[in-house]
Image 1: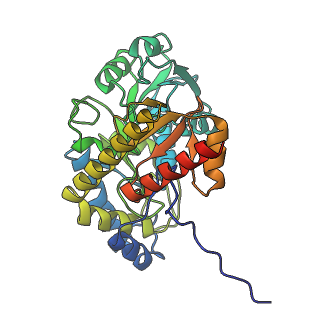
Image 2 (image 1 turned 180 degrees about the horizontal axis):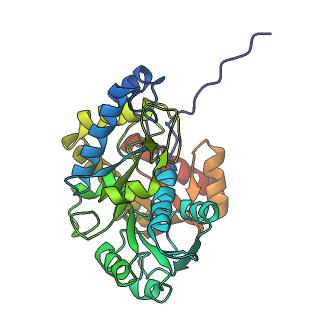
Length: 358
């Protein structure tokens, strides 16, 4: 019996995701390099060269003139690698990582997989890391101090220089998770210090497949020096290359090629325009919610959190809107490039109709 071909998820009502429609050039490049393997760079030299290009541009975005790193599967892999490198470089049998409670759940995975104790400290009233609270958790066995530049729940940017200072005090590495925020922060008008040029951080996560508009999967892991990559490397005796620092082995070149194409098409002006449009949309919808009497968390990046009743949230999802909640229960809207003003207006129309029908 002939079966219907499944239809991919449409983005027309997706307000919860940090992924988006790839740029057309990124989509085309992903298809062309689908069967290549950057995990074997001496054999697949064209895609390996593209990966070097991507790492170079990601370094430019994040303030690092001579970056080391690679195109990972996403922020989870990059964050795991940051913890793994820190653990492998440290001289302790009882390693721990200190982070704010707002840290991405991938660090809980990293702690579980790598046998590292993850210690999380409460954040401040604005949802940002509190260095003093984190300092009470750090000790001689701390291998990494983590900060976030664009938290997944509220879009907050931690005080990275202060966290880098804390890391130096305990002789630990400092890692910044800018998986989502990294492609927005270069264009904000706020005085944030978040990257390699702003503080002596050691590693950083930035994802081209989020605001970078590459095809999934395309994450970015960056390191300040080659010693960090050496701490991740294992020998690969049956490949043409002699070692491999990535977490995965064989991996499709689609992510690498699509990231290269997206960066070539959009850095920097296209990303600036996309950020400004997304931030305008976030500010507009936040004001619309506030005008309707809802409590709204100030969107410092293009992410809006709103306190809405559970019944209203459920009614909106029943109308096909793809929504999510923060850990505290607020409605969470992410203004990605596919989210238009017309889409947000339609969402608000449904919200008003649901309130009238309640």
